[in-house]
Length: 137
Length: 100
Image 1 (cartoon, rainbow over the protein chains, first blue to last red):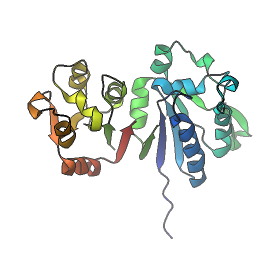
Image 2: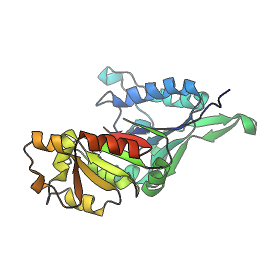
Image 3: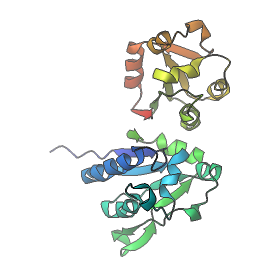
């Protein structure tokens, strides 16, 4: 029997949520990919950080507000959302402006833990260097 | 582990090249393709970011030629490669990151 290989998959999000279809499609791909039991993480940098802003309301523009779907990621074992500090700051945002996303750690009595991890550009750079597969959106 | 990054947008229209260069590690390669090749022209607003880059920087010759950019316009330190060179870069690195 061949050992199952777990690869490190990084989904890189660099676009704002509603101007193009990239952000929604990226989230769809992440949810599909979650079925394959890989080591998945997401990065939000450049305009991608706007995807995680709390309080999105798309009623007035006739498109689906897909931001609540980020809350489901934890249930699919997608628990690492790296958000670049510099990208937030350049856009006048702070971590407090982002949705509170958590996952439940079954190894720790289902304690809720934050999924969003704020990282510097240099930290993100080395995280990227550690990936087997990078899918950029 | 090292990554081949491809950039296909003009650096004068989008910040993809800038962001890519800021996130590329030493030993990585950055290949400019399609409209990304405008970033290879010497003496532009993008030149400083490229000369500061730790990664190797490449540009696809066919996309330069298609846009009428002569190879002597390409900034120093950037290597012009063909499709065969593109393939080599893809195989020499463990992953490819297409900056879209």
